[in-house]
Amino acid sequence: MQIDFFQLLDTIIKHFSDGEYYDLMSKAKAIYFSLTGKADEDAPDFENRMKLFNDWYIFQFKETKNSETLIKKYLKDHTLNEEMAKALASVQFGLFDFQGTSLLGKMTLKEYVTNSKFYLAKDHPNIGLMKGEILIGRIAQVGDENYLLPGLTVVPMEAKSILRKAVKKIRKEEPEGTGESFLMKVEQLNNKYRQYTHVDINKIFTF
Image 1 (cartoon, one colour):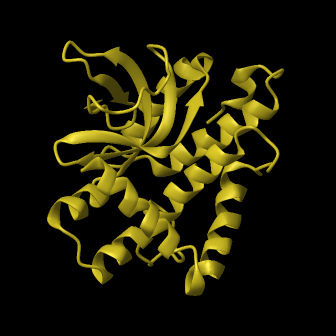
Image 2 (spheres, one colour):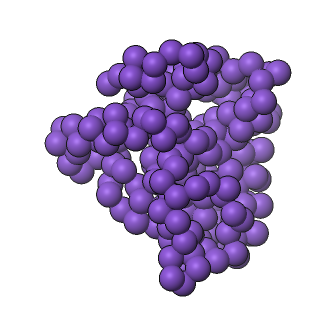
């Protein structure tokens, strides 16, 4: 089922990138990189940053304040089977702490803002992190299993204590919120830190 899901996700991205949506995608790209920092096509992380953009474009971008997300539009305009529709609607943006592998052999993630725990599917590709490392990305529940979307970025472990303090503040200010603006800020600061690794991390990760 996960293969069908990711194939569908690729189809949706292509649908909103071509033809009548080309100008909208270009507009969204300009907004995204103004929020998260410019992308260098020659940089080793460029491909990954484009994957992060694709996920943001489909699941978070709104052309206007009152517009719906593109994924909501797609679900309205297309008839999908119930499981695929639920999987697309389940996608959650988050800041995840990798907590190692459970006794059942599943990689385990703890999401900072919502304080939720996720167990990745047994057949999920290895995410290549050490226990305690942090990443930003999106996760989907496909059937009974959880899968990370392609757009992921690792945050330095040195920022963990700073992020924990910031998350406590976010939880007080937005107890029912998803912290999307905060997560975008983390992504922007993370990209900035990659450019200025010689600078004290405490001077970059400020909220």
